[in-house]
Image 1 (tube, one colour):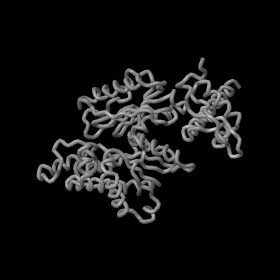
Image 2: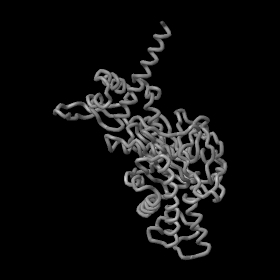
Image 3: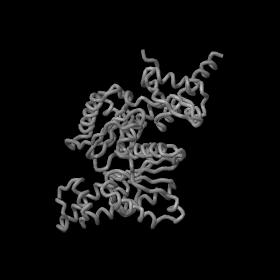
Image 4: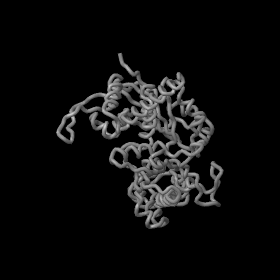
Length: 410
């Protein structure tokens, strides 16, 4: 009987955690909400809502603000997450750069900053640079940073905290990146693949804008590498070893060049920023028909494309078309309702980019599929991956908020 009683207590606590998570996610989506609306949207009893909200108020996790007018003219006190007090740090790690952000528990972005690595040295030294600047950002922040979310490129195995490999970045193979970033922090660190972080951010944007959120979304990272994050039936698709969505390593030419992953003709070898830069420089050796210098920067390339520089535009169109060909494989395999594309390639010239990619896709899929597909570039104000890195931490906290904050504040 004692064992049954203990099991019942465990199940009850687990149900309470599920209910708390449900309420926090509704508040993240709605921003400001009355208790009666939380009860209606969640399906929970009013007494349950009252108990949960009282717990959160005692911990300063939510606050009461203003009055809301209901459908019958009744006024209710508004409830919202205390995002100004409780925050997370987001880190986006790329091959030659990284970004840091501060996100409130209410999904609001408070700060974002981009960095270039001061030196392209050993992986551990590069991670140490990220870690030190992250510490500075946390120290400068008002409020309490509860956790850190990190988005990393390349296949990442959550089971052992290691990157499998990162193309064009020697030295990251099998680095225990979780352990390296965790050093020096007394708050938890959660790591996710960059494309997965991006699709989480896009999913939340869709949820915030609609009562009926999109359940099948693909976010394509088109930057220094190529990858995709997949939401299927409302859930993040990971795969057995956490490597689902590695579209950059799907072959589009079985006799193509050998990739670091071991495959030949990988998509990433035809349409990443790395490839675009290499192709432009290769042509510049044979032609001076461009305003670009050999050591051009991303900003200079963007300006050249805006000025319709022939060489730059021609090479940009090529990589955009190759990306479209790769996206056809996603469509045929997963049949998503929405495909959202972001990162450096997409930002060079959004109009040229999306028009070229859409044309390449439309030519290669059935009409009935094309007519029901939404394909666009990301419209998240800041980098979707950087925002998503913070959201990864927010979601983990929402699963068990009182593991991160004291239940009763003195």
